[in-house]
Length: 123
Image 1: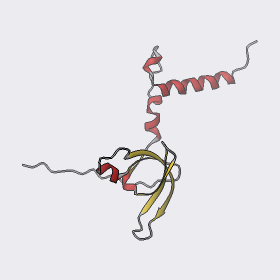
Image 2: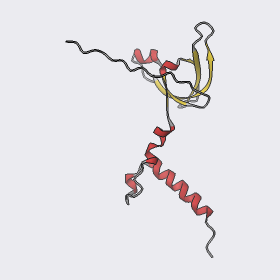
Image 3: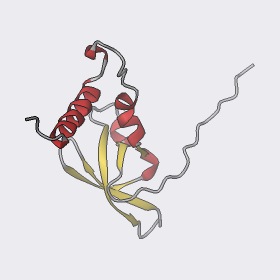
Image 4: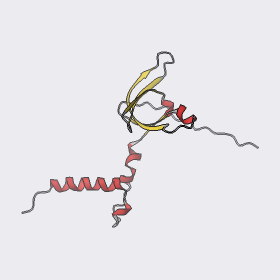
């Protein structure tokens, strides 16, 4: 007996200027070409004159290249919580700083420098 196929349906997301997204160039993807997925920043949204579908203009961050008329069906949000997960879950009680990711170490160093600058000078 054949197993029923289930399809995951992504909820419709509205993006605003400055949002970071992952975009897949569907034509390049289906043709098996490299460079089909990139991180972009939303610059603006607009409605297509014929289809009335909302499309987005993005800046491809890796090359600072403008990409126009992006279909949101091929975009996914990049949540800040995911980008900051390594810092939020850094094993601060570990004596071995090698167990921490470079981002967590950088964050700690930044705050240690800021905290030290706020301390009064010793005489």
